[in-house]
Amino acid sequence: MQFDVFISYAWTDDDHREWVRLLAACLRSMGFNVGIDAKVDYGNDLDGFMRRIPESLHVLMIVDDNYADRADNSPKSGVGMENLVMRGAIDTKPEGWLAPLLVRNEERRLPKWLKGRNVKYFDFRATCEQGDFPGAEQIDDLWRWIAGLSPDKQHAVGLATLCERARRVEKIDEIRDPGAWASPRLAGERIAFSYADAPLKTMILGAHPYSFSLSVSQCGRDSVYVYNDYVKAVGLVTDDAPYDGLDAKTAYGYITPGRTITPRIGQTVVLMNDDGCMCAVRLLDVVCERNDGVCQKPEIVFDYRILVEE
Image (tube, rainbow, N blue to C red; front, side):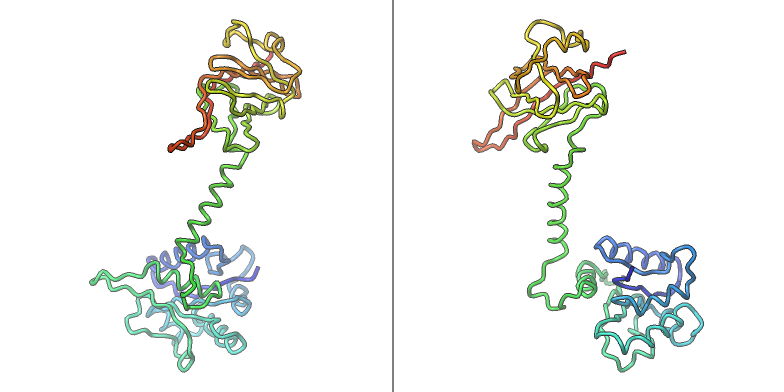
């Protein structure tokens, strides 16, 4: 796969290597495919990896003082070899293909072969004594360069805004994920179900073959409709049969052929799935939807027991 950006750097020391790897991780989190020596696949030699430099959409030089020294004076080093490949490719590339990033480089030194070339660079140098450190502005500039956006930010949408938009989209996808509306255990107590947010207003109880879809909608202040749309059938315990004492055979006696039942708080619903298995659901509370100055989403609270047969 073609790299969005190839990172060339010197192994100056462990702190520098860590900094570069963190930068690469930051760029990957933005969605860019980053080429860096740490990601050489097993079976590929480093020379082969370097030959991918001309194929990359961009090349980013992390230029500290040690990098400049190696580029100028150590042609057989990794940095020297990478610079030889870059130097041979740059004249066939569009303007802005290569950019140095200055770090720990007080005199703004660049490899000598770049002299006379009008290359854009990114200044990530810090002045610790003055509390001056690179930050969001530099990261934003770097992102715009890799993304192929103009450095003119007149119409820019900041990374913070893009991240917030992505968070909104992901949150909705998370809410809509059926897995977020499931309780795979055989029994549960005081389960709160904000059914208006759930896909099809349905929650999955248990797991196959003991899997049941509890589908509800609002009815009254102390009641809801329960549907058989995603199970085989539903029923309502209309007598004084205890919730804890129900078994599958007894529960089946309450099943009805209709589409809906209307339990009230304190009553028990029975569900039958397509395999003929039974589940008892006891309605503990009903919260009605409100929009009178205070927004309240509809919700039910319930216990359930899947009636496993020996």
